[in-house]
Image (cartoon, rainbow, N blue to C red; front, top):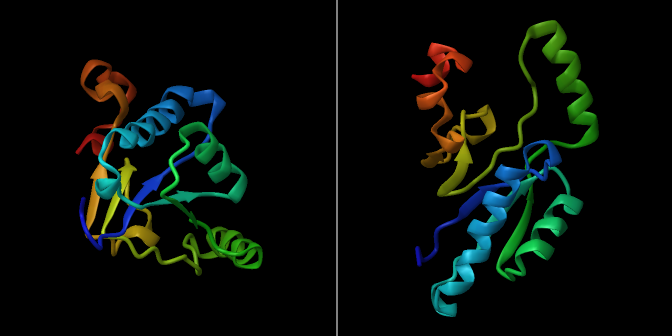
Length: 138
């Protein structure tokens, strides 16, 4: 186990992309095969407690910690206005983690996470490159 490290896992429950949902659920469920002393605490970044509870129920992994990855409702409204006017957000929730998986890009509130593990599902960019912009693949 990576002792003392804050390991984050991004999770979205999405019926339209159930493969990604099941991938994360199965990844977390597989941690049951580690000896208990080696099972890491995982900080689950998700939009709300309900989504976190879905993951907890699906995996039965008891070392999950809910970490809301968004700002408050008022800050969110201000951000929407700022995006329209200034083309950038004003408020970000700074996330303090040592590792984060999976991401396909780095939102500003994750830019201080030193170890981001990127993931493009199924290597689609290799086998179906015509569906991707070149700058997204670099």
